[in-house]
Image (tube, rainbow, N blue to C red):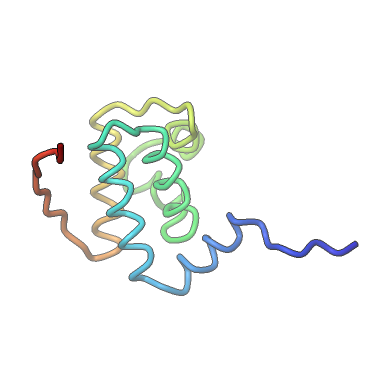
Length: 109
């Protein structure tokens, strides 16, 4: 029997490549996940964005890191330093031509 659905990663990668606004929204979500104490989700989202946009080789050049190290950093169990994470976010925001604007809001309840 033929497979009825596509792999979700393939779908996300295709959408990221074709839709710059989707990439920007996903980057925004990665920032939100990171700031809201969900680092694993943030790293996975960043990995998807890097794969579909700049690529790990180019990211390595721009961050002065080894591409294999970046792959490990952005894995589900990765543990990038604050400096490396800041550099990754900086390169991605430049690549996607966005700025971050962070707002704190009160918790409901």
